[in-house]
Structure formats: C-alpha cells, structure tokens
Length: 124
Image 1 (cartoon, one colour):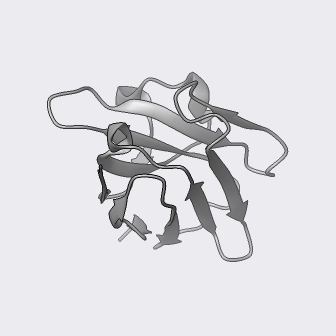
Image 2 (image 1 turned 45 degrees about the horizontal axis):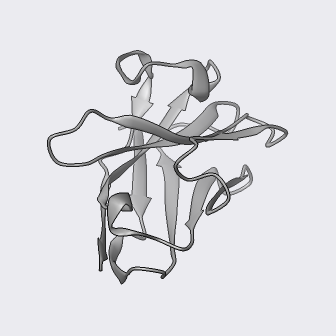
C-alpha cells in the first residue's frame, strides 16, 4: 500500500517548537516534489511549505515564513517541517503532500498523494 505517514504532531505552548516528519512507504517518493498543507476546523486546506525533489528550492506561505523550515532526506525518503515560535493560529491538522509538479503551484484537489494528517495544537 502506497502511503505517506506523518508523525511529530502534538500539544505545545505558544512560542514552542515541533518537528513534523513524513515518511514514505509502499513506493519511493524521493523524486517527487513534497510539501505541507494544514487545515483548521471550519477552514479550507491551505498551503504551508514546499520543497523541490532535490531540495534546491523551497517556498512558504506568508503566515509561516521565517518561523517554519521545510527540509528533506531523500535517502530516508522523508520530508520534515520544523516549526518554531508557534502561535494558537497554527493549530490545525497538518498534511504531507507529494506530487510530480511543484507543490506550491498545486491546488489541494490536484495533489497526487496525501498523508493521513497529524494534529498540531498550540495553547495560549
């Protein structure tokens, strides 16, 4: 079964940090562009960050720029999202994504592969 499996979510106080991981299983995603989206209750899924297949280019939403860092390890076929200076507005389910096209340019409905999501809750 082809899967992207997220981990690392949890409850953290405002100002704290978390690192999310997304590992591939069932097939290799090392040549895919990858990214992270998030979805808060009652809101649409939104782009957070993306990274090209070789790690050469990254992109971030304005709301997380300067606080979040996306990275990847193709040998481990894993993508990471280091989140710092978290605020309650960052509370959401975070989803890992993979696609043959650069993630930043994709609408969520067009993304090829998704993880199951991991909950991040930031308390004030």
